[in-house]
Length: 516
Image 1 (cartoon, rainbow, N blue to C red):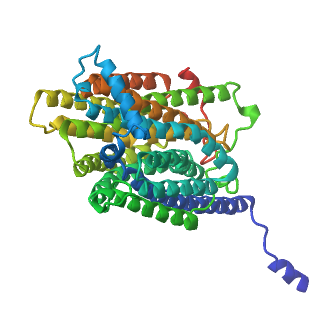
Image 2: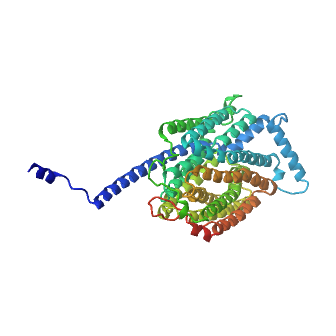
Image 3: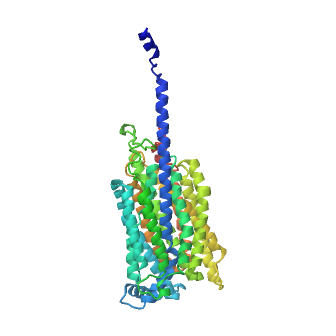
């Protein structure tokens, strides 16, 4: 009797389908938890990057007048670095005037300031080009968080030096340290790639673009505001930099960012190895087509070339914009901030209202279209600014035409789309074949772009210096239109294909080879 009761009370073994159902539920819950953790980390990266870009953009509207201030202090002394540089540029200008009738060069020292600014901008980007691959590889080995905190320490050091840059030499040293330390954007992209899968990465990368847009909206205006506060000229101090109050505020932002990252950002290097969420697992060698790795490398090379070529012209033209408005229309710091703020606001609206919506629908497949649209916008913007310069040469009222603001819209479209969508494409290309070297791929990609940023300002400022603003921007418009055509033809429309496993990005070699 007892045996019968015991047998009666013994629970029945679960049916096979019930066991599988429980396992599936656990898997879904794990994926949901890790997806939520990925979103949390992405928000942390966005807030930190916004603080970083605000700090970075504060100096932009101040650069032309900062160089003027250093020129006033020491430009006439040939024993100083600035005095020797300006003397050499002036000597070169006088030689060139012997065989050209450039009206811009005939402005003398005002023209020399544009070339000096281009050289300074190129130095910063050249240093970025050198250090970006190193930062990418170090972050793959030591971790994202540790590498980012080292970069933050360098950013704090350069900003402290900026506050006390009473001479051009000390300001130049500060910019060198800044160029070697600025890895925040690169590592932010890598962290987002760590915690997102193929279906959510484009939306995550779009947050980087939004941070840029908001930063470029507010940062220049903040810089322009603080330019009217504490400065060496206003206090008579011999140890402070021109516009030192802006530098102090920039330092405060960086300190806040450093503390925020230290206490909130976890390590993400092994995020996908320790969880099943979005694991871009390596496809077994037996199932990979022999040409897959060659196709990956080919597409990555093409994306790097496009990034270099685009930024060579775009960054050069973008860098000369504040010098153009200073030269043609004598813009004040506040007017410079208003123009850059307009570009930032427009870019923010495009990012939030259009780009993220397209990325969300396309799940990684709308990036090429957005890049092409941004390049077309850039072409039209450069053409509009060239027309503005032609109009200014014919007019004597000293006020910019509406073509300047049309050009600013074109710059905003390009800023909202091109670079962050290219970053998204690079992070997805080869993600299944090379899951452990996202930092290296993005580092090499950023390095290619930084070569363009290094050479672009010198090229653009040299053309501006020799032939004037209208020719400079016309050359840029033609060049970007040709790069757009090259991109559309040479780069495949999509570099990922759906996988049988949810969240696994697999390279589609057939699609890649169609473009080859």
